[in-house]
Image (cartoon, rainbow, N blue to C red):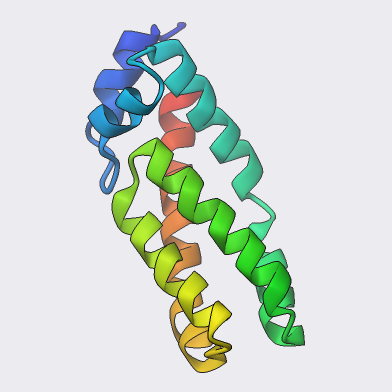
Length: 125
């Protein structure tokens, strides 16, 4: 059974950490666009734990910073403001070469984006 975009939006409102109204505002309240953007986020999130780990384990903070900056912006535009704030903290730490902060906080950030992607995938499929 196909679910309409309006039904998906209604279900998305129950996703912890996702401010659907904020995300919709960023796409001029076009629910079809918002659902599509969320789908792209889900699709692109899968391999990132390994990439983040490689950057941190090799000390490649430039690549790490680019990646976490992208997440900061994407999460904010989706309406995942708490995860976006966590990404901002990781980005600041990376820019200041505070690898201890990055290593201590990256796992929970990755867990958060993976949990968000998993919750979204259940609704969007």
